[in-house]
Amino acid sequence: MNQSAATWLVLLVAVLAANAPFLSQRILLVGRRDAGKSGWWRLLELLLAALLTLAVGFALEARAGQRQPQGWEFYAAAACLFLTLAFPGFVWRYLKRHRDEA
Image (cartoon, rainbow, N blue to C red):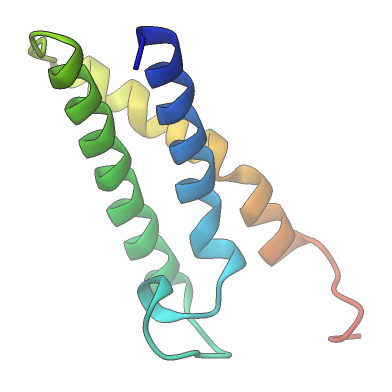
């Protein structure tokens, strides 16, 4: 896999992982279905998804060559990017009016 394909793969994984907690009613995406899943569960799932995305990125970077050490600035920027990517799922879950609830 070339570097460009690896970059697109990490971005695709990030978009899907960032929105999954808001689109699914299952606990940790594989557990029991909970109609009243709280926001704390969604935040925990978002944190775990961000860590999973970082792990995929690190694995692809290590496969392509030597993995570079990162400072706190990288992790702060990655967290902000991940929260930005999660915005459509958040809007769909909390800000959009759903017809079945009205």
